[in-house]
Image 1 (cartoon, one colour):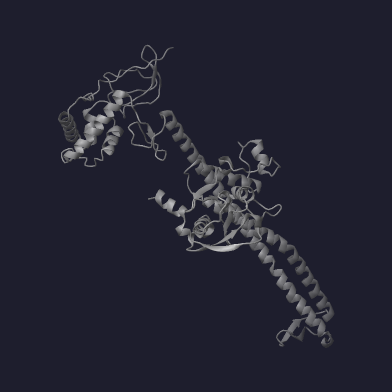
Image 2: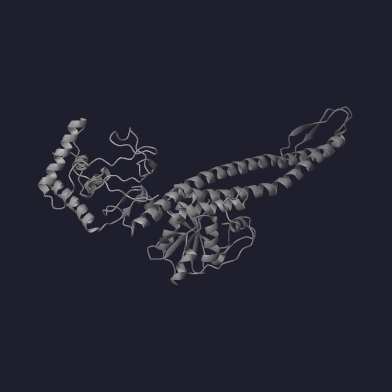
Length: 499
C-alpha cells in the first residue's frame, strides 16, 4: 500500500489534515476526525468515504494586488459576513473570508504586527489600514521568498513564522523547546504536589512528637516537687504519731505550713520512701526524654530548611527549577521521609541511601557552578545562592574559598549565599555586602519581614559537623548585617516577571 499527499484545489490551503485511504476511497486512518457537527459540507472519519475538498472560497492572495482593491475586498467580506451572522463587522474575520489560505490565527497575528486594534473596517483609521497592508505584503513576500522567521512562545505554546515571537534557529528546534518546556512543567507540577504532601505529613508528625515529648518533660518538674515533699516529710518525721492522716510541715521556700497526706496503715517513713521512689522514676523518664526532644527539634529545624527551599520554587520557569525539586526529593528519600521513585537508577538510589560515592572537587569551570542561582553585585562580583540543602552543602563546602563572604539569614531557615570576592582578589565593598545580604534575606523564611538579620562569615570559619544533614554548618566567627528582602534584586526580578 502506498501513500501520497493530495493538494487541495487551488493554490493555498487554510487547514491541513492527513488521511490514509484505500484506492476505493475508504478511509483507513484520519489524523483529525471531522464529523457532521464540525462540517456539514465534508466529513472525514475512519470508515467513511474520502471526498476531495470543496473549491475554496475567496480570492487567492496576490503580492501585486493594489492597496485599494485589497482594502475594498476585506471591507466588503466583513460586512457580508456581518449581514449573514448578525454579528458586528470585524476586520480580521473579513480578511479570513475574503482571501484563501488565511486562518483566524494568521489574520489576528497580522493585525497585531500592525498594531491595529480598531476591528471595525469602516472606522479603522487610514494610517492603520496602511500599516496593515504593509504587514500583509510582508507576509506574502515571506511566502514568495521562503524567508521565514520561526518563533515560539514557550509559555503559551503559540508559534509563528512571521517574526512576531522570540526567534528560534529552526522550526524543529522551536517544537523541541516547546515540548521540552511543556514536559518539564508537567513533571514539575506532579513532583511539587508530591513533595508538598510529604513535607506536610513529615512536619505534622515531628511536631506531634515534640508536643508529646514536651508533655512528658513535665515529669522532671513533678520529680522535683515529689523530692521536696519527701525531704520536708523526712525532716519533720519526729512529729508523726500513729493514726495521723496528714502531717503539717514547713515549706522551706515560703515559710508557710504545708499539709502532706499520709495514707491509712502507713508510717511517715513509708510515705517518704514512696515519694522518693516516684521522684526517681520521673527523673529517669526526664533524662530519657531530653536527648529525644533535642533530636526531634533538630529534625524539625532541618525539615523547615527543606520546606523553605521548597517554597522558594513556586513555579516552573527553567530546567533548574525541576532539578531543584529533584534535589529536595532525593534529600527526603535519604532522610527516609519518602521512598525513592520507581524509575530511579541504582546509582541514584545508592546515593540517596548515603552510600559512599566518588568525591569530586569543585573547580572554577561553569559546570562546577551549574544549578545555583546567580546574581551580579554592583561592583561586578558574582553572588551564588543555593537552591536546596544539597546545593547549600556544595556551595559552602566545595565552591567557597578563602576571601569569599558566606551569608545566611539568622535564626530562620534559608539558603546559603556566597559573595565570590576571592575571584577578583579584592575585598567586597559595603554596597556589595548589602546586595548579598538582601538576597540572603529574600531567599529565607524572613523574606516577608521588612528587615532580616543576616550572618556574615569567612568560609574558613565554617565547619560541617560530622554526620550532620545536608546544609547544616557551624560558624565559629561571624558578624551580623541587616538584610532588606524588599530591596533585593531577586524581588525586583520577580516583580518584572509578573508585571
